[in-house]
Amino acid sequence: MIYLSIPPGKVFKKVVEIDEHGCPKEAKDCFVDLEDGSIIELQDLIKSALQNMGRKSHITLEAFTIYLKTPPNTEDYFLAYTPNHNGKYPTEVEPEVVMGKNVQKYNPGAHTKYGSFWHSELYLKAEKKLQVAEKMLEQKENRQHVGDSPNPT
Picture (cartoon, rainbow, N blue to C red):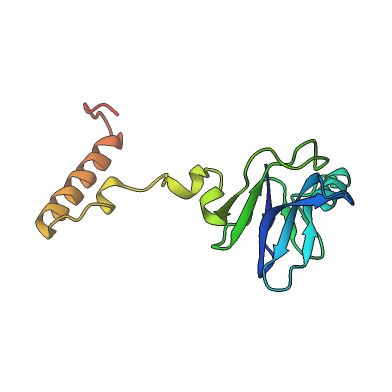
């Protein structure tokens, strides 16, 4: 799955080409401008971009940007597109419009707090905070081996 930035004023549609006899020829994935009807064909652009991508995380084209892994962590909307045979054929999966923030991979560093004391997160009364501070100090002193201390570490 790749993510496409949506050009302003455009929507994703499957455009069906009709041959000279009036029969439907083939469908193509496109960005269509609703006002003037201009079309950006996605399949050819995606196919050429994926063939020449190298090790990039995104590919910038004239009209839009292709993000290969995840889109940027913003509130912008992107089209979640699954190319069929690397863009040779129209997609079989219906693309979704997703927000960049909602697609991010789980980062444990952003969600966990290592080394933070449990009492700093709680809302305790002043008396209880003093009690906790005294017990912490007592435990700290007990851990220091001064002379023959009977307390275990």
